[in-house]
Length: 434
Ligand code: DSN
Image (cartoon, rainbow, N blue to C red; front, side, top):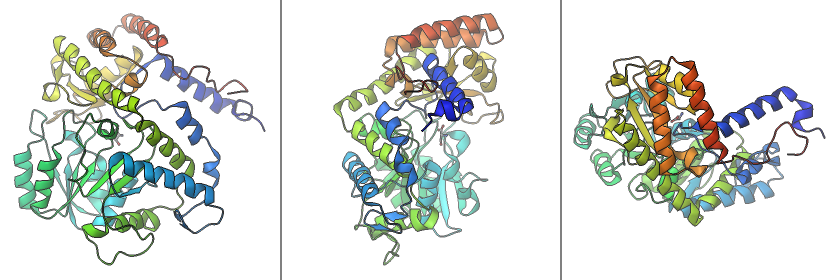
């Protein structure tokens, strides 16, 4: 059988270029990470060949004995790691997982509430053009102008709006979620509390962020951010054991496992991606190892060091800093928009993304801020002293955003740093034996 480089040299070359880009650059998008060789191997496996609609022990296709072992391992590991009684590991990714949560808990037209996307929320939490804003009556809440969630204002709005579902979770919120307060707020109107911990799942299992277990009714998460697995997602909850593909006797908290499973399949999805499930299982095993706790805490230490160094250099951080893996810098005082900053940093070998800030006067495609995170750099082994050096380069790049020479010089320095933290040594998509 031909290897990739023989069969499709164009794709092999593009993947090689991506590998080199990841190796030689500083990947600072907070929703990204670097998976282990074991996760990559499971992802590129024969699991992709198999159809297995249904759940372990109850499939619509024969030949699923091995796939059942894989999915059961993933489910059991997820349950143990997070401390819940039920895990569905089949959602293709985070958006489908949130769609499944809505499909399970709501009827079309029911009211849901979520944090507005431009204040750090997610598309699937009720944004007007997303399914969640089209098929449901979506009400959005916002942070206070300084970027913090205002729990009193949220409690008041929830009492007024009486949603059936309250989404809590974010893509650009640098602080801790107070789950107990959020549970009280949701319960004040008997709303389901759905915690979308996609960004912070790795911090939660590593003990670097409080867990929503015991407070949220349903927890959705992607598996590829701080959790450091393949692209994919999971839905976690407690309740009576699931009876897959059966209608629950009633829709209530007691039957959440059956409601969730039935929403994922046959409600929304067809065959699970078994190669992805295998890779999720591997990532969950890695996340249960003691080193994972060290990694999770180091992510936060690195983010705090980066925040401090940037603040010293006159950067305005939304909420004034961070308690988690990400920072949101408002560049208004730097006389540069988020889009130009993203481009300049890219030329300097530093990958970030432009992002809106609370009350942003600019448009989402060219907002006032940039979003930064430390998970991939932490996985590569970088520490606080590296963050301080990186903050200096970011400052220099932003001050000199029109000066190609300066940006190229920083890029060379970035390469010298990343050479000290090798990524996938020996891997190449161009060689016959990889
Ligand atoms: N796209 C993800 C992020 O970057 O935060 C959210 O889905």
